[in-house]
Image 1 (cartoon, one colour):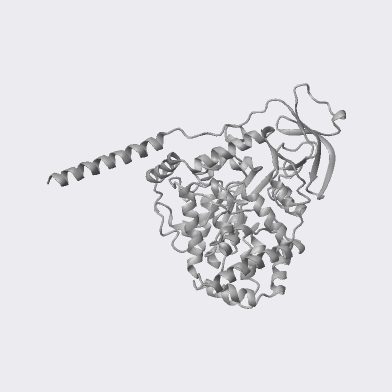
Image 2 (cartoon, helix red, strand yellow):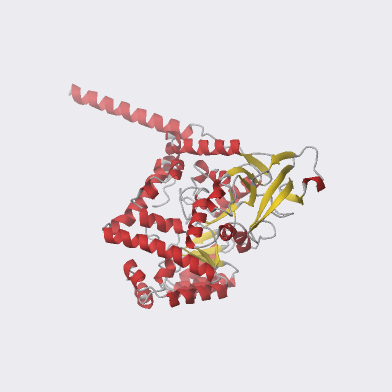
Length: 508
């Protein structure tokens, strides 16, 4: 009896210690990243401007910045420079417009974790491709969150990017809608009427509807029709039951390179018909062996004719292909991921491998990824408009890796840069303010130590980032990266993440 009593006491002590430690972690002050406020004008002297539109250098230029904008470009002796201007040495350096990530997922936890990395790696604008099914969701951010964070970033109250445009997410994947509580039935978009109701529900809340793989044909065409009536865009996946040519006709953008392989082999029509019956099966080996270049060319022609944007997200396919390899598992940027986030990501990686771990299947995945790169190069040559989007797990930093993927696909460094600067600005009809180093444009710039037109990897030789006219020098950027890395190792941050889920389980 005494032994049981003693064990019970030890048990209570352990529980008390755990609860106390957890509570301390929840209330423990987090290490913050303070925004920079540059009140004086900035003068970057004698720098080589990278003209992303023409793909050339404009050497020996000086750039004057004031009140968040570029106000003059030319020879420093010809510029009227205020006496209090901060001078930045541009000799042997290169100035590019800041970058965009056109397929990002910013979660409710992102400000607590790695959001400042966007600015540290020169990514000042993003397009987020998900939105919460309900406000209580502890993980997926809502349109109100995006608007609040964007306003805070623009007003120098938060170190993070502008989130340009907002997108809803159709919950029509297998089990997704049924596994959530407290959301309307029409969120499942099981038929045309529900699809129309879904679009009407989000009218005025978001700019675009994101379609996913498993939406039916009736529901899809109801979505695009209702969205058109209400002045909303349709973006996202090429749904399995919809041809790529149909998707090109109705969507502003199509994500992920794999859809081209799905739609350009001899069995594409039969696979689409099977998808309508809920019998989709992705035979990647057959798609590779029976690939029909003429079918791919027809897709590219349809996309070019409709002006449909293409966001290949090759990094995601690289994970599919090399998920068990050091290329993925020892990816240096994983140092910025908190273990809870890394665990969730690895769960998806391992699930893909577990579907068929045989050497033949893994080889097929790798060939599938490399074929996707080839097709992106062909799409570009055919005149399809390409955007850089990562769909990846580390904020901002991976945009530079996706730039490298586009160069591997056959784009020149200048063309890849354009896909991450001027083209995104054109997508949002904001090319008169963003996307170039040009007089009157927003002062969102990256100062590089090496020429990115010679080697796209030089986009990572960042000496300074200017966001909203505020100067983040190398010392500040190093500080941001150290703080984010420390957050990724913080037990207190882990407690805060768990507490958010305990408070708002979101019906999962």
